[in-house]
Length: 88
Image 1 (cartoon, rainbow, N blue to C red):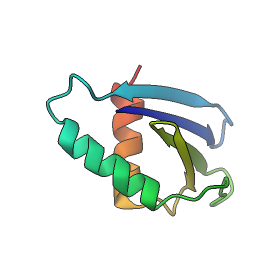
Image 2: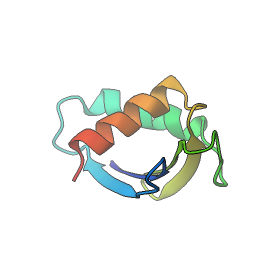
Image 3: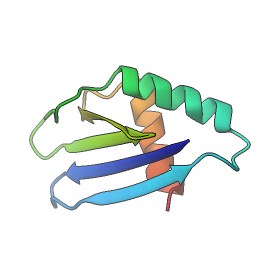
């Protein structure tokens, strides 16, 4: 499974992107569950939370959903953190 996250907004307005391929990961079942839950809890159109907050586009195997701070679900928050931290 390929998971791509794009984070935009924030005070500086910088865009950050990362992608994670779960093929070789030992925690792949957990990451897949997070991804499924994140997609279910996302919106099809970009959403905007608070001023200067982050906005996220999460793409899982070609399907993109959107979410924004502070309204991320626990699964979205964990998945975004994982992909931005460990993805390429």
